[in-house]
Image (cartoon, rainbow, N blue to C red; front, top):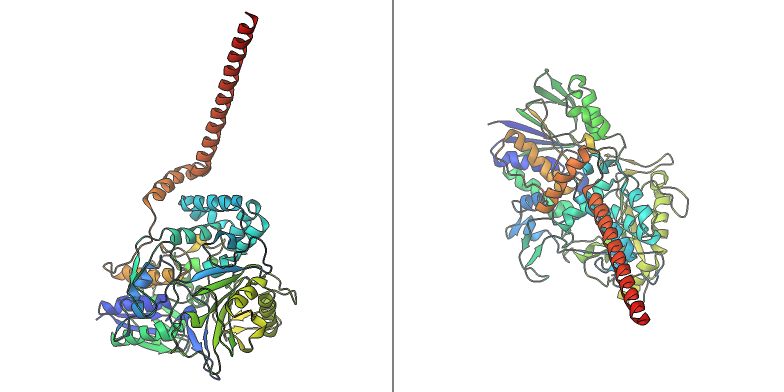
Length: 570
């Protein structure tokens, strides 16, 4: 029996362990935390049992590997995590500071007024998205270096731009100050054209339903660890996987061709036939520096430039209320469009069943995320990464209470009672964020795609035969830092060793693949995008046609005028 050691019990590490265990390998997993889940994990407050999450997480219709692996994990004796642990699609609404004539009272994403966009805004928005969708080399090599917000700002109205930009944090999971045009484009293409549909059985909330292109995002029906990761670990243990908690990798022992051993920070030596490096790239940089010869390996040397923009700051928080607060739309998340910190809110009780404990004395529990780390707040004039914890809490409350759109939503659903009517029991921030006067720091740094990192994504395979890499920071067809990329990467890492392992690639329609292939030729010779050339050609043709029509009309008028004058003379 071959042995495998996986370093990291996040989504990628568990996915790799899952695949190796199914094929009969003896698998051991070492995790620096005391539980699994990585940047997706949850815990509970020891004082009042309130659940808390590293961040909020959704699963789109293009999460094919995620849903496939969820179907293999038992939730209980009646069904899988896929069947029992996923919510129905959620709705997104957009709440501005002021309710203007363009604001849609329903707060539903598919209502055009909620985006506060003019007709021309929608045309320009769609055109730039279509260009990213119908490109291949151009988007990976060029659009990936362009800041998305800077590309849209000159061509959208101010309100339309601010609202569009506000979706980058909650939807794409990034900071609009450094997310690339490539990233935004690929995200929305995958949501709009996701490929295979995912079928769900009838449940207490309604009949059977289908999750497919444009159908929205799903949440877990409970805290992440309780609903998914604890059950996954339990399943893997039954498959023979051993877990070692609060054990971190320190260095590799490399003989120039193979990894012959690894050492933990405790000094314990760990040996295996195959090693899976499934930890965040920032930690990987530190570990690889302790093995300089390995640090220069063709894929591992990419970690240094991959982390050049530093960790991503996306701070999650909970607001607990002692009274129930109704929302006018079932399973709706609200983007605070004019928030400096790019805030998004969701009421957990909307998707969690009644048996999930919200905490002592808590009737409504909102979870939120602050996604823009470098924009100054409205009270102290400080960005998130410079606030103390107390200042951060004051800022998010000010941004929420100043949103007339949010207050309107609360009043509409609660017989005229606004947000200020409901007493707050507690405000909690994910405990691993370390606030200080010198800046905020994460206990474990999180990586996301930026305008400087696309070209440095390593492959899962390395030139070291018994070392593979997993993580959403590696090359996948998902391409974007996401839960789907993490699962795909874990499967790809195992596939390097066992080619029979199934990995589901992302879908791209044939017509877009054809246009992208043609645009690759144009890009190679330095020509504009094929759509730009087609548009220019269309406009030139239109001008020629209009010119000919005008000329023809003029000649006809001259003819009739001559005819008229001739008959008048006679």
